[in-house]
View 1 (tube, rainbow, N blue to C red):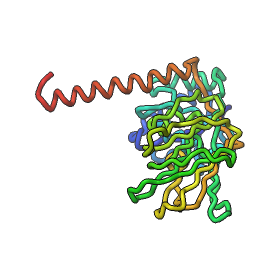
View 2: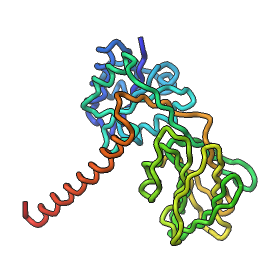
View 3: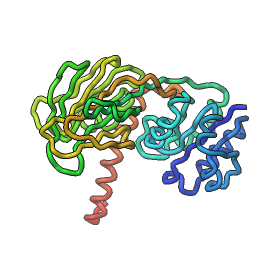
Length: 303
């Protein structure tokens, strides 16, 4: 009997209706759902429970209920164990959480019957070096972002590829993204989209104060190093997947390379990346336009 771990974003499933639906579906299709003590008690699901580490050590698959943020958080917890992860989207824009909330039972059925594919997603490893010593090492699935801190001053970041100087980017910072992260912050900052199963790194400046500054792509076996320029007198920040954040100072460097770990993403059905891209970006834009028109009509009293 396959053991299926469940992780829920309680802000997206406040009454735990989808959590209970998922647990019941897993049982109905011959699986054994598992949750943490906290989630099992809060959802009143009667599902076997334990600590978060018990869940990671015992489950065969992990299912996340929430948005891409929930998936990223779960991925950072289980990447060492290489547990395959399936995401169910309870948010608005889900590239990683591809299964729609209305298709939970069908997705669970396919999962239990083995009718799915595993897509390996490249991860990034970031090493922060201060005064010649490596002080922090961490991983990210989407991106490593160097930004100015609370002070609104232009941050000068020097970029190197394999210790070869590329350029200095004045602006709000620098994004180093994986192919998975190419549709996240990097895309918003004007970066290119990469197919998620490719192995490259995308370097995108944030609000660059320079006319010719553009994103560039480098091979996955390269090392991208970002150095906070000495003249920047204030603290800056490096964040991984928008969650873990570390303060850095002038002269500190952040070296990013392909991690030895990857995430095993469960793919249900035959929907390809470009179908998802069109649906998530185009239709979201259209819906936002409709919402804006609707709100404008309400404000003016027209229909």
